[in-house]
Amino acid sequence: MRILVIEDDPHLLRSLAATLREENYAVDTAEDGEDGLFKARNDGYDAIVLDVMLPRLNGWEVLARLRPACKTPVLMLTAKDTVQDRVKGLDKGADDYLTKPFDIDELLARLRALIRRAAGQTHPVLDIGGLVIDTVAKLVLLSGQEVALTAREYSLLEFLAIHRGEVVSRTTLYEHLFDEDDATLSNLLDVHVSNLRKKLGADVITTRRGHGYSMT
Image (cartoon, rainbow, N blue to C red):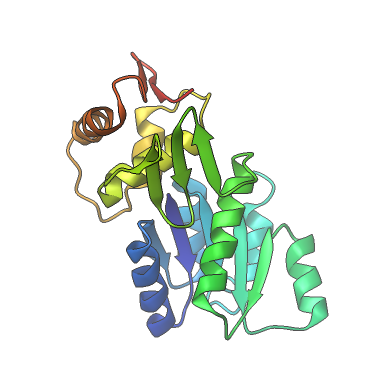
């Protein structure tokens, strides 16, 4: 999953990005509204964390220009904590609103919920024919036994599982699993898919030649 964090406080921005990467998210960052809006419009994200008090364009303006063309879930993160501010954010198209100071575990839980809902999933545990994926604990069980996966293997499996029944293109997978600083090889997805099949079974992921991958 790939997250965009738009925040002008450099310390908070670095801290948030580091925490999200520790949780296996690919993370892009922006320190002002114009850069954030450009990235939000031009790259594929699973969620956006958006501050309100930003230079060049404030968070309200970013949100107004982003909606309705972009449907990426947006979590407003701000010190503006009045009821009127929260109502304004939600009415302008934000999907959730968290005030500073905040608890990082709550932010992570809210992001997980936003990503699930955007994909039409309501429960944090996905059960696919004996393959169980706990999206909170980042845990994978096959026939009741835990399977050890690398961070990137887990991210690929979770993304396909959340979008199960859909054919997900290679381009979409690269957009959602790798951030702007990743140096990737053209066959990297094939390597990860091959490793997942070895660990979970040959039929866990189906290749749709010329289209991408799917889980059913």
